[in-house]
Length: 48
Image 1 (cartoon, rainbow, N blue to C red):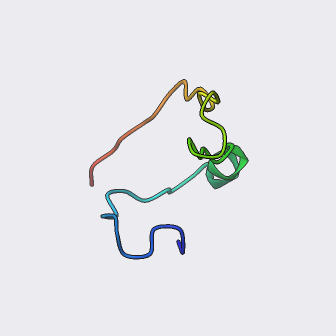
Image 2: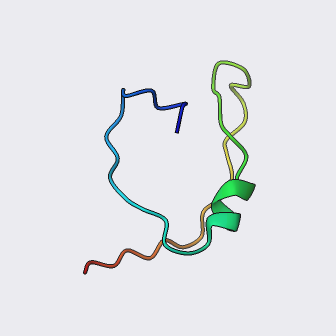
Image 3: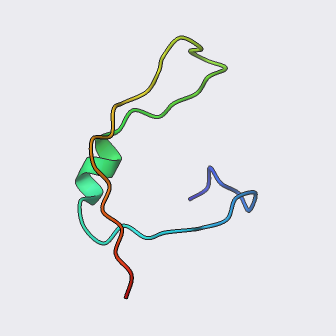
């Protein structure tokens, strides 16, 4: 992801539901400080 440009650690991988991830509204507090972001109702973490 170019937005991360080497400043963040990758800590996970989307294995299904990429369409849902891509439908989330990007959050930029500097551009819109009152926008609280989308609600994420469930996250499933699995270890292999």
